[in-house]
Length: 113
Image (cartoon, rainbow, N blue to C red; front, side, top):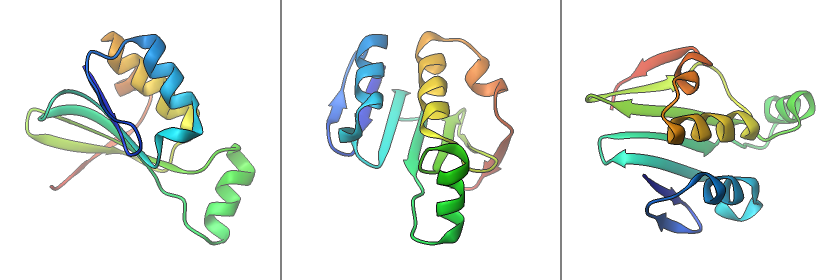
């Protein structure tokens, strides 16, 4: 799989150790995509915005808010609600390893692209 981030670009054939190192740092930027192909991937983007809603999320969860999405078989889905960076990291690890808990750990809604 290929890991793509805002600040680090494409990292082909990413392994679990590299994934963990990159997503644990503050230097990867505001988005990350872990892709099997251009049509099958999981992605996350920071949803930080100035304002009380974001401040409340950070106070409650100790993390900036993130949006988590995946695409497969021509359809794209978004996790309902915002997630933490820890949840993003866990979902990416699960996706990379081929486990299903990245999918079952969230409620997903279909989005139109």
